[in-house]
Amino acid sequence: MNLRNRKKLLFIGVLNTTGHLTILGLYLCILVSSINHAKASTSWPEAPGVVTVAAVSEQAGVENKVGKIWYEYKLAGTIHRSDRVSFFEQDALYNYPKGTVVSVHYNPKYPKESCLVPGVSSGAIFSMYCGFALFAHGLLMVAIMLHRCFIAKLKDDGKLTGAEKCALATVVTNIS
Image 1 (tube, rainbow, N blue to C red):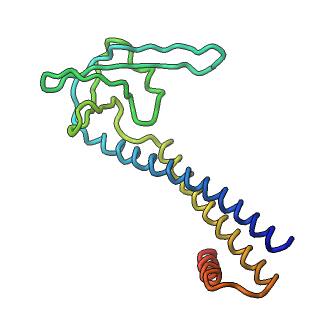
Image 2: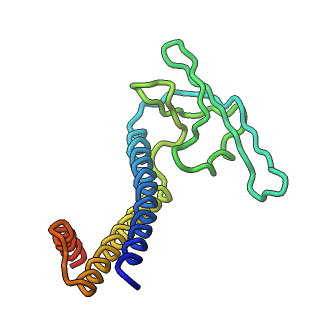
Image 3: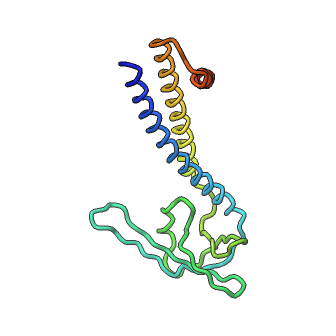
């Protein structure tokens, strides 16, 4: 394979991997932000509330049940409504029949924001660690592709530009 085809393949591979890394990076930013927010909910004050809507229905052709819950709580004379049970888990939907008195954890800075089950689930933490591992793997793949391209160019013509030498040194340092 000649150098021109190698460069095209490298460009496509790096572009593809970089695109995936960008999407994964955005997902991780949102996930980490949500996890931090969920952690903060453990220190939110509590107020009594009541479940006003609790509906569980089965979708046709789907084994999973779909649940919806709404609850109300009163703070400083204002009634607030929310449907957030927890930040990550949905299984808790089935534990709150209509009319159940609940303890509502609310954000003191923004009282409309609340949840019934504060904190972070282990599944969210696991997802975050998996995401970081995939992100690191993607960076390693980009580094390996760049390294191989520069080595191939050295074998073909024995010359590298100053920018290519700098990039190769960075890639070799990061792989080692």
